[in-house]
Amino acid sequence: MLANNQSVHGRFLIITADDFGMSSSMNKAIINLFQASAINSAMIMMPCPWAKHAANYAKLHPEANVGIHLTLTSGSPSHRWGPVTKNPSIKSLTTTDGYLLESASDVEEQATEEAVKTEIRNQIEMAIQLEINPTHLDSHDGSLLGLARGRDFLEVAFDLCEEFQLPFKLPKNIVNQPFIHSDMKKLFQNRIESAHKRGISLIDDLICLPYQMENGENYRVIQDKMFKAIRSVHEGITEVVIHPSENTPELRAMTPHWEKREIEYQIFRDGEIKKLLNEENIQLISWKDLRDSQRCANGKNTLM
Image 1 (cartoon, rainbow, N blue to C red):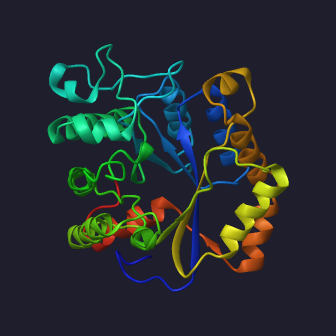
Image 2 (cartoon, helix red, strand yellow):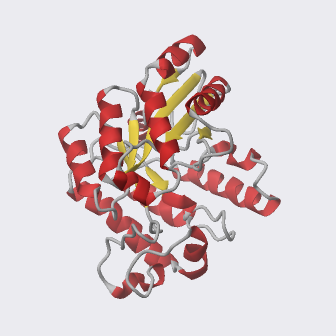
């Protein structure tokens, strides 16, 4: 059992598939990876059109650890979605035509804390009503983190982490990233300390390759980048986040970076990752492990 917010000895890895529920193509890939034991976590987007399909899989397969990818921004112009909250109280989170705001920057500029808390609470409660037993909370598009304009909503999210007894995906190593300026570094240091005081478990580090295809990238190049990142995992708990999808007309209509989603899917299907983890003596761990340890350390029952 992991002690809450205590130093972990050894190299541990969570392998998470992002955007569960966004589309049929992504759901199929994520379910295939779960069934192949190639991932041990996924993050569901409750406002998205395929969320109920994803939730049904999670209900029927409780061994599939599913966290909630708290979603405050919408997709591309051709694939957009609205909030799960169906009343005017969250008007500051929506466009004039009723969709969620386009970007994290828009959320930071326009949203009220009350609207954010209402919507993300409703996303959590919707997941639970669909019989998901959530493992953790996370922020889609970084819209809770304050990276765009310096206005974060992490304390709002932490309130719900305490209420629902869930960890939050905020890597402690974010304060050492070169793109973080001094004011943001101080903000994250304060938020990490706040999570510690509240008894909310965090991970140590995060691996996530750039979402877009970069110049010269192909399957082998991307695989090499992923392997290099995993080999560099330090002691503690690291999460690797991938964006897998089957290659379909649906996917190609949704994003110009469809090829990278398919490649990440294939890289984690081919079995080489498992060999690498064995070679590097990296142990797999799950968000469920962190959640249950957090609840145990805080004197809470591990059952919802």
